[in-house]
Image (cartoon, rainbow, N blue to C red):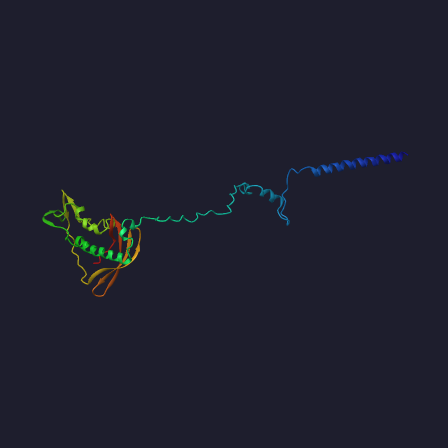
Length: 254
């Protein structure tokens, strides 16, 4: 009988011990982990570590070396787009026809005829002023040191050169009279032009074609024609200046 009591006590002790161990295991399984171990990527898809990073902005994820990570690139690169089309009647720059309405309907032949007249006038005026003293009435008795001779038919440089700059651009030929004209004591003096020999075979400067029309500039090709059968190509450009067209790009043909 005594043995039965001892056996019963041992069974009761084992039962109590088993219940206590089972309770401890259940508490360990339900308790949250304080540190989450990194989970490696599996064949099944995104890992726990990837899901954590995906919930944060790209710029907030710092690199392993401690430097600041660059902001994520935009998905689309913005472009400037096409420029706004010009409205009807709008131009990018001033058009020569705004100044000279009568030229609006000119053909290429009209422009060539106009340029030919300017070229012919230009050759005559250039020769008159820069290759000779045909523009001036000189008083050989009134001279200054350095070879300056009194001009009696003009009192100022502006008045004396008005005809020249009526044909030629002041912008392009502003130094044409440097060292040639001077004013002193209300009088105009000049230095005589150097002798210039004209090619005896030169015949004419002929405007051959209209090359381009820009805003205030007209471009031509011309030919220097010689009686011995020679031809030489040159360029002529007209510039709208001071209310009218002037010779801008022009080389005297002789």
